[in-house]
Image (cartoon, rainbow, N blue to C red; front, side):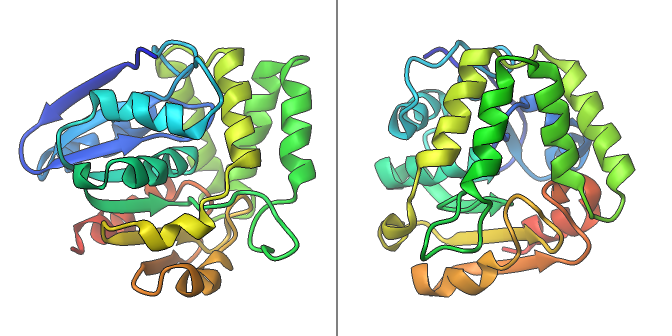
Length: 251
């Protein structure tokens, strides 16, 4: 899979992976501040932005495609679905990941009998079913869900809408495969094999990745660092930029 990617700035390498339905443009409001500290690599996931459609809906294939264009070794930061891909990459090539930072991401996005800190499977299935009938409308509803109940919700939604318009929209194959990854992937048992330092930033009011995940993390990975950002929803790096940058700088 041919993935769009670009590296800009100077300093230690930081790789950014966006979430489902979006693209590398979502990071643009943060780039001036990030360029002061890092050499930023932005990669667009399969079927998103200008990247080629996915050849499969296997998480390992997506992670390998990202690794093929990633720096030799970097701090990886993944938001939502991008965080899931980053986790898989860290399992496949631990020597390539210096640090793993997950923003509003989780090893398991849907609820199970033993996993309540996630969304009901039916919610994701509804999005999947609606894609074929109204892809723009489905994306709009997903963006609205990301800010529901959060501080600065209207401003954050406008920022997400503007980001979405900056680059080519995701293609149906990318959206469908990405939803399949969110529905079926379960890396909880694999967290014990992660060798890179692991940090999570969660939104207190996130409706997609509930803040209750913070209570489940120690059982999966006792040395993981977790911060819950008060008032934030699913896109804390946009709604609470100063707090996000402070967290990122806190090595």
